Amino acid sequence: MSHIELTLWVGALIGLLFGAVGQASGFCLLRGIANTAQGDSRKLRAFMLAMAIALLGTQWLAALDYFSLSDSLYIIPSFSWLSLPLGGLLFGYGMALANGCGARALVLLGSGNLRSLVVVMCLGIGAYIALSGVLAPGRIYLEQTTSMTLASRDIAGLVTLPAWAVATPIGLLIAAWAFSNANFRASPRDWISGLIIGALVPAGWYATGVLGFDDFEPMRLASLTFVAPIGASLQYLMLSTGTRLSFGVAVVGGIIIGAFAMALVRRDFHWQGFQGPGQMARSMTGAFMMGVGGVLALGCSIGQGLTGMSTLALPSIIALLCIMLGAYLGVKGPLSLANLTSSQQ
Amino acid sequence: MSHSYRIKTALSRRKVLQHGAAGLGLILLSPFAWASEAWQQLDAAKQILNGATPITQGLTLDLPHVSEDGSAVPLGIQFNGDLADDDYLTDIHLFAAGNPQPEIATFRLNELSRYPDIATRVRLNETQHVVAIAKSHQGQTFAVSQEVRITVSGCLMRSEDSQTEPLTNPRVSVNQQVAAGDSLEVRTLINHPMETGLREDSSGERLPRHIIEQFTVRLGDEVAFEAELHQSISANPYLRFHLTPHQSGELVFEWQDDQDNQARHTSELSVS
Image (tube, rainbow over all chains, first blue to last red; front, side, top):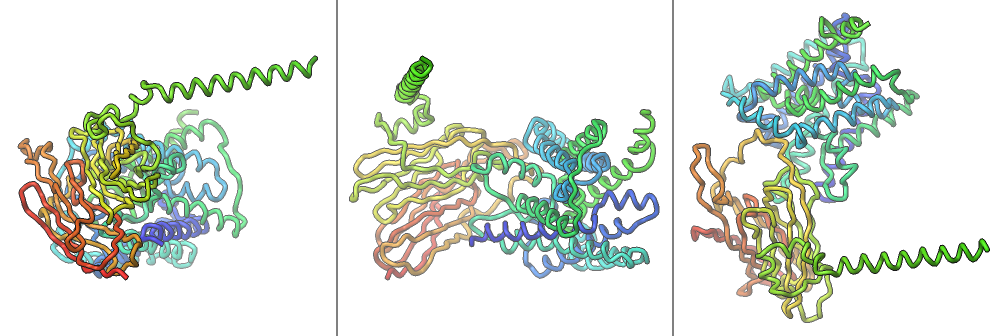
């Protein structure tokens, strides 16, 4: 087996685990934010625990020289002060409209939710419209005219310490906060999901950075992310004879199969569709916002929130905060879904 | 009645099909159709063909239909066409019809590299046809072309890869042992910016052309494989090719750039 095939199989396995765990636990940043607004923070704590595990695992592997995170697309010398936060807000609000992020939609699709099929397709098309389609020239113009150079590429550079020395206390602190809640500790479904999904991020870095490493045919260092890969998966379905399978596409395929298998095991597979055109329009709008916003923000709630954060890149922190703010605006306050739909009636 | 009627329509349908097929054949064979082949519109390719009509079977280009990164598009070329037993390919020319300078590379082959299976990475600045023309020792010509659609890169925020020191860190991956007559895969990589001479730096100054022009592989005293490279080869040139050595010796790899600087790498090969 070539190193590329091996990486793809490991990617599919990572997706399988993500799909199975996500299906069984309901791991979801949006659900976490929405529930927290109503007093139940377990899902949010599960997400934060996953972030802590991703951060610790990634930085320790990087400290042991398995790979250099500066080869990833998160550690960048400059970023757009406009399109990155704007993309984060769009993604977060779109996530609220579509009732879950791209990864969640893949998990639900495996459980028989056809609403998620529409979300996945619109998200993928939206991502490619912004990435290489009709919105790409505008996106590039925006990124170039609002580009700013960073004083430091990651947090560790600000305090001139090795990255692992900064990451370890931060990771332990976040994990301690997650476990500081009795309800969370009493909910193994949530903390186990956080532990496993968090560990899949360093596993992804390891797959592309170590198993996929080849001097002659280099592979981009990457881990879990779900905006461009969902678009690439749609493209692969249509153009597979003329394109090559990538790590991200293998993960996407794995998630659907993993979630499907877990849904069968848990007898939780149900065909579901839209209740009406209003819900469908809302989901499609949200999915397009996630696709375009995810490209502007260089990642989704998982891509920036777990994978990007695990590199300690400064733009990832900004992107994640904007995604969370966008999602919060969608679930509470004057712009929230409940508020908007009630004012229409 | 109805029976004969049915036969009649069946016949006429067959006739229509025959006419259609003949018409289609005419269109394919007409000079107009030939002229629309990518290599017929490319002066550099026409020069090499020198009026000959190339065989379109045998030469295969392995390129993605769509590429999001025009700065390093993986390209493979294989030959499995019909040649006389004592004949072999002597050169393969690669062109990017839509690049400012269409030449990508020319590979010079001989009896040691007579089963071409070559891969590299190329620059394509827009959606275009890539053309390959091959010539055999006895004068046969082969041609193939494929369209590649180039879209903008997903990660334009990353500035052009940090400049590498030219002609440093030559890397070669090759087995040290091979059975006589077996195909030996060789992979090579070297640091070089392959500056096209068309790019400007941040202050608007044109960056001077600086590329590797020649790559030569010798087995002992014998030249086994040669490549002439042009601007359309990606930075840090990568070349994968196959040799069929018959005797042991020292493999010598040499890269030469347009400023007369050289890099060298040697590797012992034992043929059993």
